[in-house]
Image 1 (cartoon, rainbow, N blue to C red):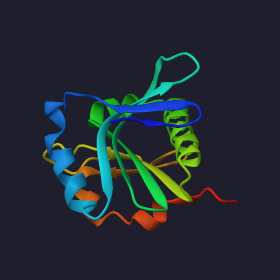
Image 2: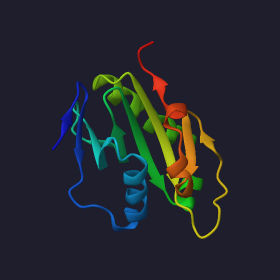
Image 3: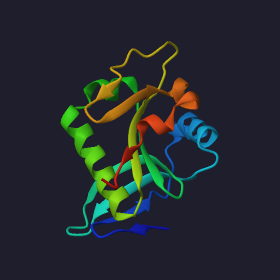
Image 4: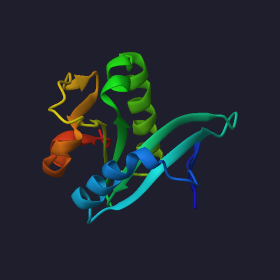
Length: 146
């Protein structure tokens, strides 16, 4: 399976990552009424090179949510500019696929204790994995029609 837009080819990886089992189960529980795909690679049509990877993408008829899963260590080292670029590509993909709303969040793995995380990188919501079940999707979605 793959999705093709004006500028991107989106294709899931063929082998899932073993270290994301808990993340996948939480996404499936929280978004059980949505279509979803895991480990989606985004290639630019212009050069065929991988541009981004989305650990999960969930959608319904009008909106799409891109999710990145990070360990506390990799989250701490994530540069704001990289997070902004990841979110901007998500927005472009959502527009090209015809969605009316989109969102992009980072989910950080909890490690035995509450993860102290900065709740936002510019443009993104950041939540611990333990809070994904109560995540308010409506607050994360941004309008693409204006």
